[in-house]
Length: 188
Length: 223
Image (tube, each protein chain N blue to C red):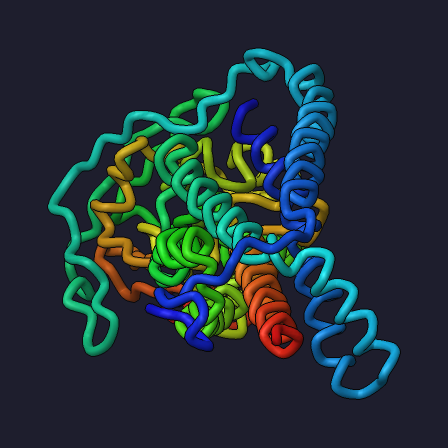
């Protein structure tokens, strides 16, 4: 029961993270193309910019606690690709935590490459889950990467949760940097 | 890790923003609590509809007795050292508790090892079932399946329901929780096939999805 409830909860949080990643990412890209999108980006930046690093830390912490819940409480054995995603996600809790306390938006230059690697592994893992026949014809008996432990709303699995988390962190860190640059530009 | 400074903050720290970051965090916290309530509401019905005990008491795993020497693990590449070796006999039970056994040396037999959570097994079973139903199995050749690596926490559990839903027409032996039968046959991946000839010796071992026509051709050579 607790696994089902928390999986549904994590899936709902994933929807929020996905919305942040898609809307925020789309806005960041579109702002280079149209003045209207640039204005919307400015409004979004001023609305959440000062909170963005803290929110990114919240996302990383939730992802970390969620992965620990699945391995230590639900006893889902992490596969090889899960471990690579953990290696990318867990340090972000410390990096973003320190950056939030010191209001250090330059952390983006350290965070974004790690997020990119973690997100790429998560995307590959999700594709492997959905189309196992494209990569191999058999399952490893110990901890196969093709095993889908959680399947919510017909499209959310654990790697998808990680992918959405990495995406949301990237967008929030980018917004924090954006907000900082704007503030520096307007400071006398 | 220091931030770019303009010489004002000295130690690289930006002054706190006057924007409502507290408001944003409160809004997020309230949203998280609401989502947790929604998750509880969504899964409450699941708990109500789950019948404790699950109705019929099905045997998803069972004790398996192995007679004979265990086979070495199937190597990733190169010749299989188990080919020509005597296949071990198996004695166990099916999902309904009835006795199921494999005694090598009576007739050519294909042993199929399946895991309920394995997506390749989930593709293989519906591929083989219609072929078996239409008489694809060569005459004189037997087939026995072993449900192994059973994990109640893994997807597509229980295996008895899965195989019944797929209309799997082959007798099933429920392997022990420790995978006694799988270990005895040197299983390294799912799905796993062991073809045993009429002398009770291993003719071939295969892992991974096998097309029905390919399996049929291999079984024809067993006769």
